[in-house]
Length: 250
Image (cartoon, rainbow, N blue to C red; front, side, top):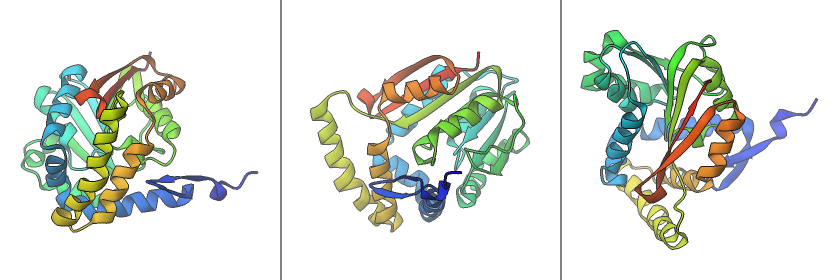
């Protein structure tokens, strides 16, 4: 049998063994948890909020639905979902306990405690039965997964027939000149912001590098189709700085 410990993947600009990546990613998000929401606002000048609202607009949450938000961290997506559908319920799953702790501290968490559960877990091995959820979301998290196809297969497994997958992730600008300008900003400014605000340059250097290693829109759409999803579509946000991908378990 092949030795899985010899398989490699990327961790930002570095090549690492597959069995090392989860621990490295866990370390990044443990380090930045307390400043994660603040840094999101600063790095994107608040635009990430508009992207998440666009996600909810396309998703159109409905009462009675059960949401699984993977890599849900501090609860941003779950809170938005439940605000739009007060009769729904949600589970926030993240591999980093400190991110979930920060989420539980937020005012919305207390107000929605009867509709919201927080679970530590792995996107590649979800601790849920088949056909358990109506909606699966993952925002700015899929690029950190060691084996993205495994995470997409798990998403398909836990969704009920007729369930929907939606992924919000940084992506690629279709214009080469704009992409170069964005890269200049990302690689030169964001790590410095991380040092100034979170006291952690290295974690934000990794986050920038991981964005550049993520597949482009068409390639990622094909990966979603390969996992079994139908009616796969995507929408660019801010000219492609981020993108929304949608698919259905038909």
